Length: 125
Image (tube, rainbow, N blue to C red):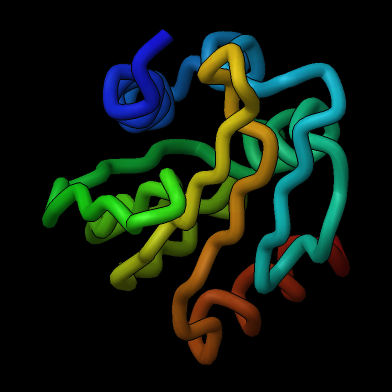
């Protein structure tokens, strides 16, 4: 599968809240590194994110390609946590792929100042 197609599908499925669909785009050993959740396998990460999310809205801001084949997706993320609290921030997702075009590694980059506080409150409940 073409990596740009994989990246676009990833964004679409994430936007739809289709966590099973997102997980299917990852290699079996796919990893996610998140500022809030730390590093974990993709399945565990998206299951936790799904449980912590009431609703989300993504506003696409660009797709960028590195010379080594990695792609970066930039978007604004309006996240409504399961608690009902809302936070909005800009995200850059760095995607690395295996030879089959599956996502091997995802590194999520964003400022966690407000989201970390709300996420920790959700964790304490």
